[in-house]
Length: 141
Image 1 (cartoon, rainbow, N blue to C red):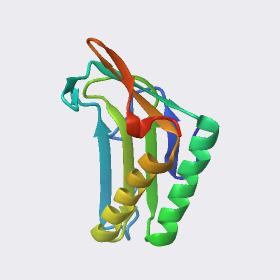
Image 2 (tube, rainbow, N blue to C red):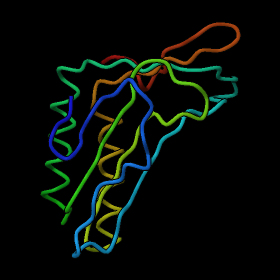
Image 3 (cartoon, rainbow, N blue to C red):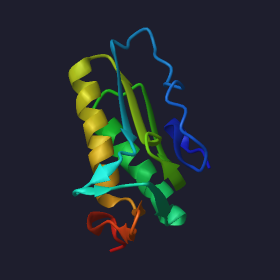
Image 4 (tube, rainbow, N blue to C red):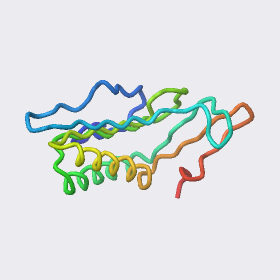
């Protein structure tokens, strides 16, 4: 379900080439892409799954985007999180910010990803050769 600013939860691969458009006033486009890695806490990860409470997650993501717009001069932003099963190397989350200056673009991008991970009800389960586990920091609260 798309929201203003391209805020979405998706089940298909994230197209990281679909950057937000820039305006003639923009001097910076900052992009963060989180990818699935093959190891965590000394254990080999085979793949993982993301689940979300979508009815709560999307409105919270929209609020986070609105807060970033209040704090920084953002002309465009995108915040996309993948759900479902992901393989090693696949993009799990992408945040992009266009702004007149790089300092503001970097600050806004960091705020968006950090706040998304800390507050939005999206949970990650890792799968290993000998089992699986919900990550403690990602467990439902």
